[in-house]
Image 1 (tube, rainbow, N blue to C red):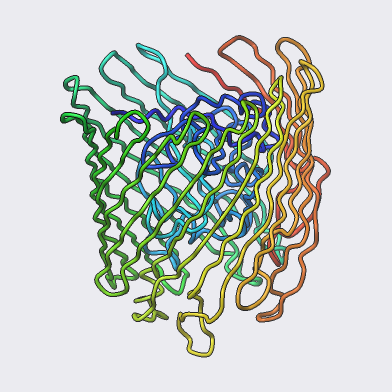
Image 2 (cartoon, rainbow, N blue to C red; image 1 turned 60 degrees about the vertical axis):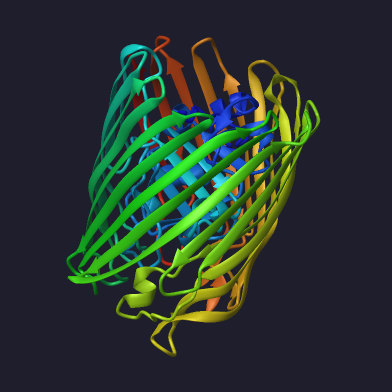
Length: 599
């Protein structure tokens, strides 16, 4: 019944600067939970899934969005440093097209302009494992999954009895952080508690002043599950975060400050009747934001969801998943309340056509009260042509429902219809000895009925034309010896919308690096990232190119014992000056040192 969420999958170590991923990425019997309604071995799914474990997340630094941006096909745009508004993009498509879940809870904010998650507040103390599922996934996850899904799991104990982990880090810009994990596991259940605190003085978000924009946040998560009987398991997960981030409100006003609190609770029951395994869950997530000087000062977004999933075997070669979901979204904008609800039914069949070929077919129907209902589908193929060669292919459709703000906010248009999409991808992966591999994936997506702000109407409106994003992802690793390896990934993205080139999407994103085991206890790595071909507004509506840039990152770690490690990390080693978007600063050279231990 319980999903095996201990994933290390094929995400392909295209996470360039993180050596552990490159070493473990070929454990192809591992399970991924996000690629289907039924958890599946990574070499038996046609979907593209990148996976990060706790060590890789920690080695990437406090800004998890920046760590994710080192994966092929992933980029990030930030309005400054840690804690500021940050938009993740998958294959050129932005945050409103990406579903985000933490421990099964949908945590995107229904009160934001477009329903999305701010990755600027996602720090390394929260996730223990991340799966990035790319491509249209509305057949599995409904609205806002046209580009993919980021699925996050918090820390869990891995051994019977009491266990835990702790980490501390200090570094540039007055940054310090600490995380404590405590857990207890028995034969019948487990409980896990995590607390994290991070604070930084930061640097000026805009390049028109020198005033620092700081960030401080506390995070608390709790998870528990217990086998009441051999056929019944009950559990819950809870999340609380509270943070304050400074930002530059304009080129002449550096006084912005945003308070944000997020609370989430999910309870579930997993049980078996006959040949069918069931999971019933109820969740509630609330996001509160307060901006004392904003056009809208108080934002509150609430999402309540009730869902059911059943799974069963259809003989020896096929599995069936089926379910239903009800969801209600509410937004309160300076006391004005707006809401909408929807319901859905869905199913998926996973079929082993032969020892070498696996197929999956997913279908979902979403019903809305005040605009057209949506039917989404996905078909995926994994063909193991040889033991060391896998071909993958996916076709899918998706949609994004207009947000509450786009429909009923101060500039809303109640008659908006959903955006609709179609996507396809095909990829091949070749594996070699010693953890070496090469992988290539070609992707294409198009979106109709784009929703954007219409300056002529002073309101949100459907934009005629089609948004397109296409390109290729390449990644690989080659072991020169038992102690030395080179790795890299490259993404070419051609993203356009009815207005021309998509803003802030790199045309070319290249990472190359080397990792080395210097002694039994000492390891090191260095990577170089080259980003070119981005465009952004100069003065609206004029668009011009942003400067290309090159980043060098390096780090070393030393194992004091099997359970304690010290590390040093240097970000932007050559102190490159560049604009992540027009008029904003990025971090200069920054040094961080830390300790991690488990017990």
